[in-house]
Length: 182
Image (tube, rainbow, N blue to C red; front, side, top):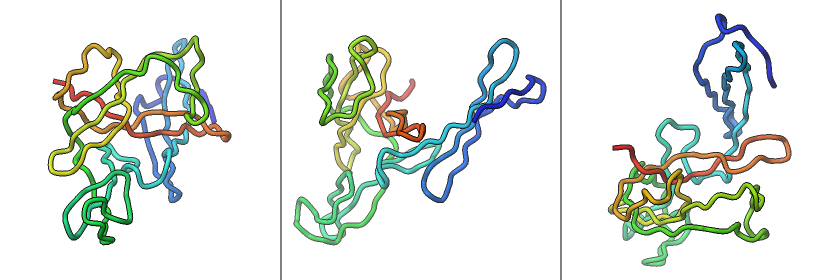
């Protein structure tokens, strides 16, 4: 949905609202030729139960074994360490440390990977493990404009980023890791 408004009557803020089905509607104001355009974007998590949504400080949702304390991501019904079945939902800390990473220099094959890039639009990206002390190491994409800035041991935070669009035009979002600004 788009609608035009004059600059004087238009706020210059983003507004989000959460719906009961877990989607989030976000209003974005765009400035073009001295007028504002309001676009409402519906954002949908790539899968339910992976991260807190919507949230100004997103956290990964894992599980913790009541018997031995082992944490897993994503959530599991059974503990991989003691084989117990007393797993409880548990939130990961919002920040961790980059444990290791690698770069993806070519488009992953589809299937099995969902991709939206073409050979012309593809940009290399990083994938790595972030260690959440006392919790677990979690693999994920690293949101970074300059891959040469990545260093093992740097502080990272969980962020939510656009992933793709579905058939209805909703923006599919997923978690990623981003270096914490100094």
